[in-house]
Length: 166
Image (cartoon, rainbow, N blue to C red; front, side, top):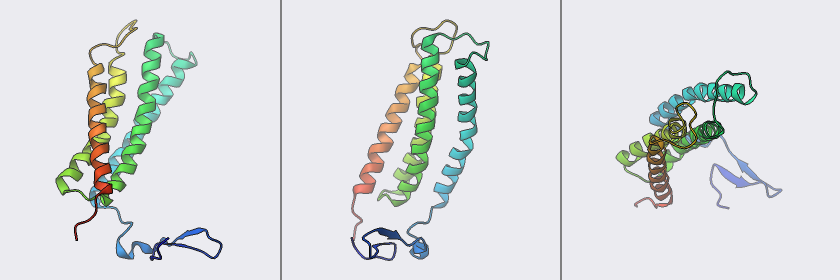
């Protein structure tokens, strides 16, 4: 392991990290990352309420009559919302370290949280209605979200692998 101010091996061969290394701004978040992370964190109470709503349905405390298909779609939407919000938060920090133009960084900064909304929203929208047993045409929202997520992941991955120009 290279000997730099942020990481090294101690006498026992364990990795030690110097958390004061931001003197070189290596660990500092950009203003845009803070804004997008803040907005994303503010969306979590809505996901928590969705979990409460699901819990009332699954424990029989709600009068809502949903088909098994609807329950499955709502569970999938809720689960994907939580997972993709966490991915969005991590991505915002990784974007700060990617070798990409400002425009590409902004596109994927928006793409990650937007995909969380579209993918989870697609599951919910596709199951809206009474006695629904198969997805309606609003399932297209899910597929649009998947495309946004895929594009954002590929661009970020390339940006993290690229070498800086000398």
